[in-house]
Image 1 (cartoon, helix red, strand yellow):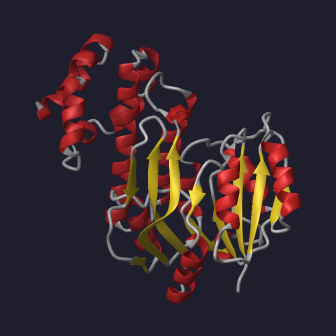
Image 2 (spheres, rainbow, N blue to C red):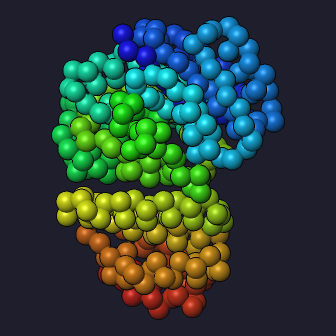
Amino acid sequence: MRMVSLVVPVFNAGAFLTPLVRSVLAQDYADFQLILSDDGSTDSSLEQMECFSREDSRITLVTGPNGGVSSARNRGLLAAEGDYIGFLDADDEIAPNYLSTLVSLLEEHGADCACCGFSRLYEASGVEDRMPPKSGDILGTDRDGFFRLLLRPDGYTTVVWNKLFRREVLLQSGGSFLPFDETLHIVEDGEFLFRSNVQRAVFTPEPLYHYTVRTSGAMYGTLTARKRTELTAQKKIVALCADAAPDVRALAEMKYQKGVRDLLFHAVIGGQGKEIRDLLPELSVYQDALFSSPALSKKETLKYHIYRPIIQLNLQHLGAFLMKHLSGHG
């Protein structure tokens, strides 16, 4: 049995940490190392983690100053001893067969990465759904295939927390772990995936990871630095796909364009004129594609059309530009 190292970045997660740790300890695959990487927590998280590490020798605690989720993951990777590497979020849970299923998939298919579906619980409403909809196992047999699976619109998503990797595909040429980009605080895991050395990946729709959408994670409101960072990360992903197959490049561009549109409309809702002006260079690059892409869903088209009056009120200096490209959906 090969050891699995699971890295968990922790920052002020005292209210959620125990269910996550208990779900790991309940695994039917016993050979694991749970690395709790504290990111300068100021609540009860550190005290809880110290107790967990005393209770079970498979739990490793590493600490450091607050530097963000990428910094905490990088610190945790330095302690990873396993043949397989995974990442979990501190406020989520995993099914008892999470590790055994993903390890079996890796070994059965000779894959570099195994990924599962997940359930998604919305904290505010109590509504739960699953991603992706049920389908058969999917195998990506080369790098372009892996990128296609990451960029699929049906929900495998560019995150690291529902995936397990062979250690060697996360190593740089010198033998150290590929680092997460510490300048990114959102979509940092997506950018990391596109820099990894994964070639062959297997995806199962079985929802073995239980993800909670916290109320504090709502995206509406002012255009914050966090949201701008998302756009930066998406642009980096486009660059990382520059040598990929044409259809992969198109998928990455489409995702980036959607990010620009979404950020624009978050700003419009909040009346953030200055932030919207900051998006002008991005808008000008994709003048036609942003609002006339045939890839836009009916829901997106309707959303942008409904927002037209708001745009007129908040963006007189952009009104002519935006109305030109929204008019095609009228």
